[in-house]
Length: 318
Image (cartoon, rainbow, N blue to C red; front, side, top):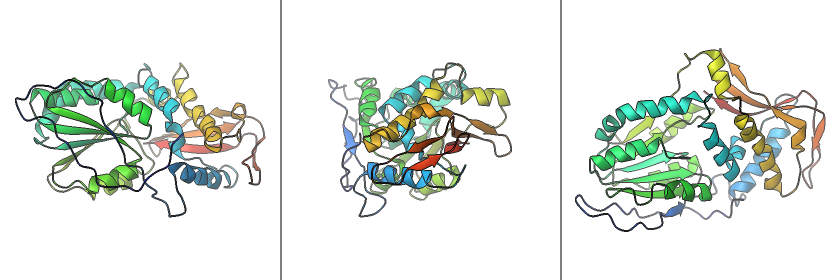
């Protein structure tokens, strides 16, 4: 469970050793807590904000109900998503690794010495490591910040790269995308490079503009974008793999609702994962379908009726 969120404060950046320096013994990689109360002064924690969104989303009319996508990314969700990226049906990771394997040095050429790299929703770092390896080969002194919601996963994934580099230094940022954007505004004395690999949000254009507004002409925004021109069956399989990992990943969000309220408010057995690829809009739409009539019972709140056959939306992937 996420803990209390302090107000954000400026954080000093410690850069890697200068060119030609010897690698020091590996030390623990710092994780910087940048979580903030972005909603209002009455909302003290990120968890409170998600609870508000859950209640508001489930209180909507029939077949208009929704749940926040943040529910997917607790510690268990991040581990399951990493498993998804290894599934043969999930073609996106393989394509990204192929592209990065061929063009990592070209990307590194565009990153100036002394820059900071901020990766949004870092997750597993096997793709990012291809870029970091290229930067190390070019002996560029840069600092890489992995931004993610779950501190244990940040510690685990960054530890896999600990001691690997001399010129590239590593740190984690614990918070949301909004927290990362706020933090980035405080850093203006170095070139800033944003990495967004294999991610998706519902309003991608607005999301990119939000971060783009922070950047200066010397900064860069490196984005991986999937094409709409794959076979429809391949796209459907990518978001509903034969091994069922994506289904477990999705249903874990409902388990997370129960964790969030510290009581079983949702009967997870009453729901199934029901993705739909919208060919007109070019996006995968993720829904829970209610298998039998049930109620969501949040303490001190009026029970919310979910009808058999009703859909609850929880994400788009463009």
